[in-house]
Every structure is written in C-alpha cells, then in structure tokens.
Image (cartoon, rainbow, N blue to C red; front, side, top):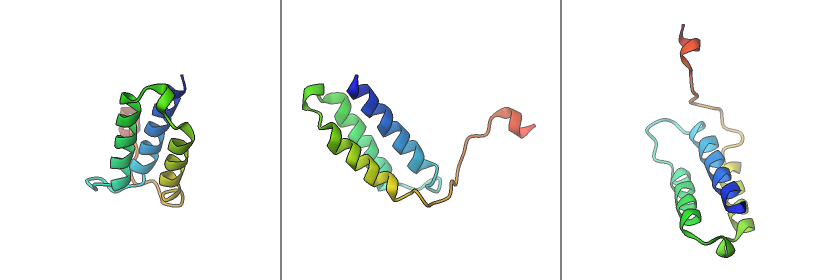
Length: 80
C-alpha cells in the first residue's frame, strides 16, 4: 500500500513541477521524478526508503513553490 502512495506522490510532484515549467523545456527535476518512479516500480516494498523518497520529493517541489503556473488544462467547455 505505501508503495502505491509513494508512486502517487511522485506523480503529484511531477505535475506540480510541470505546471510551472515552460513547455518544451527539458527539466532535470522532471527527469528525476521519472527516475524515482521507475525505481519504485522495480523495487520490492521492503527495500523502499519511504522517508528518503518523501524528503527528495519535498526538496524538488520546494524549488517551484513560488513560481507561477505556466500551463494548465482547458476542457472543451472553457473554449466555447
């Protein structure tokens, strides 16, 4: 169960960063989120250092806390 929660947290962090990163920008932080996710997927739950991962995600996210949201999803109703 904790592994699933960590994977969700990685996705939430990646989305948080992506919304604050210009499109077509290769963000090292997004790449790191991807690497963390891949590691979680291939690692057995008993070998996952939950606190280390949460600390790393918090560190990544903190860099973007004060940045504006640059991109967002528009559904079709907003375009009408």
